[in-house]
Length: 538
Image (cartoon, rainbow, N blue to C red; front, side):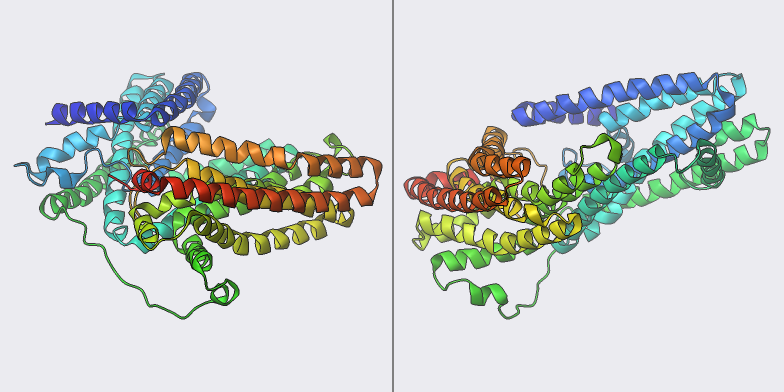
């Protein structure tokens, strides 16, 4: 059964990669990133073999971090890798005890498993200075690898029941996104803190050793600390850590085994629920009572309720923050005078730059529900105008708030007209370009609450072309405004900044009007084809 499941998983993976050029390219790029990293870390572990005074510190902390990374990744992939979903075996005469070993081994078929196996081999070599520590390192590597896979499987099993509820899945997706952004900001700030010499290397090492002394008695460090305890002559600690690791494996295997048994007997999802219908909000009173207004009100609600749209909006808000944080990590002496404050003042334009990509994909999320809009006779122009209004009533206030906030922070009030003009050109022009591109290139997306990484969900060539156009064309539209703003900064003439504001608004409005009209005509001529392309076929 183990060999059968391994072969089945391999064949399904190959078929999935072949089915989409984008998946193939992403797999190759991931491999090009993971393989050199694995080789570099493996070499570092081999080098630790001759550095026994720091071998314990880096092996225990490093592999404890690897063990923690496995279950954390569950938040990204829960429900996304359904190649060997338990429910698919429900009609076959197999028991959980037969499936668990094979499914455990398939957990190592991937770049994460490859990285863990390579590092495990390096871990054994690092402790191969003596026969007893080498054998114990081999035992610890096997136990640690099993803990990694089982922790992921058992946590996924524990979350699967909760994630049958759509709201919890959506909340988890947003939380993971925010955590990633927060972690990236923290890493950049820590790099600056260390780079400025605010802390000595000895202090960092002393702190790491205190953390390591705690980690060896946690589930993350039990299997990886076994040879270290033996090398220090603490055989009692080594035995206890081995026993603890075995008990942890038994507990995780029991949790996962129960979930496999439940999946074989109850393969159908039971998630569901309802929500209270409340009265209208501010947008219901601001937007017109017309077909475009109805589409706009629906779009505003989707921006809040649909995590796929919400994550795109959050990415727009976060991009200026990431640029500013990266800028703050650069020593002031390496930047020209005024460059830091000018970059902060113009950071809102980065937020507007992503607008076209967000708008162009909006129709793809409608799926088969778009058929209802088509059947009631909604014109293409009403669709484009309604979606544009829905984005603008949300994005314009956000952009104004970000512009004012960053200009106040930087103190560069002289750059306010130029910043507003460049942002207007990118925002309004981006909505226009997105309205046009979204009417030409569409692709199907999984339904709300579905698997966002399922086969075919990436959009393929259509998503790639639409994304490239959404990133490049708004920059071309904003070039006249950018030229005026830069010239005004170099010459110190504020009038050029106000001219940039006027040109930015005019070019943005003109592009918006063109995109709505051109996109509407395109949709009116191709509604059946559009519906066929955005309908998810599983």
